Length: 169
Ligand SMILES: *[C@@H]1O[C@H](CO)[C@@H](O)[C@H](O)[C@H]1NC(C)=O
View 1 (cartoon, rainbow, N blue to C red):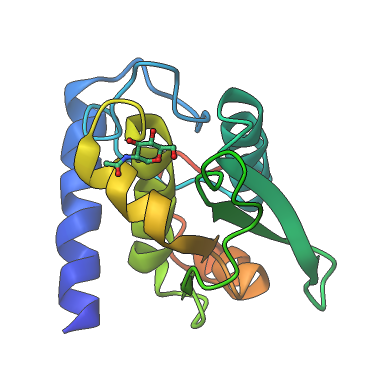
View 2 (cartoon, protein in one colour):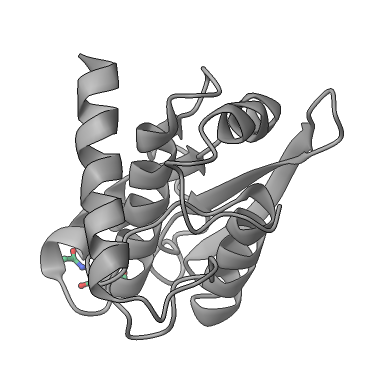
């Protein structure tokens, strides 16, 4: 089941790459560049760059942090999304907190990327979409896209011919 979804996505990614040969290496998703235009996996360093950029671009909403390092020394990047409480109310201590953790098995890379897309989508649409605004006004969401960056890096080596656009980790 997982493997099948994985293969479909990889096939789609390869087709997308074949259609646009200018993309030769991974980059953090550009401003104004929808992930659907350029689907690819980010490596661990790029996850850190994406989260740093979201924290910079949406300072009242997004905070990046690290929960430590993997056994092989890779940073475990996390992001919190949480709209500030209305003026005068202080922190909303009763606001529910949710944490989304992905890539627990190193070679299950799809969830890792979906969590990244979700974090970016919610941060960049807070001002534009009242549903997103309502969600982040009432829920604090934490994202840990890769619980196992060492496993991802090891899986990438063994699947090197099919995982593209992530060759500079
Ligand atoms: C979210 O919170 C902000 C600040 O309190 C408020 O201005 C806005 O109307 C809220 N949005 C929704 C959809 O509840």
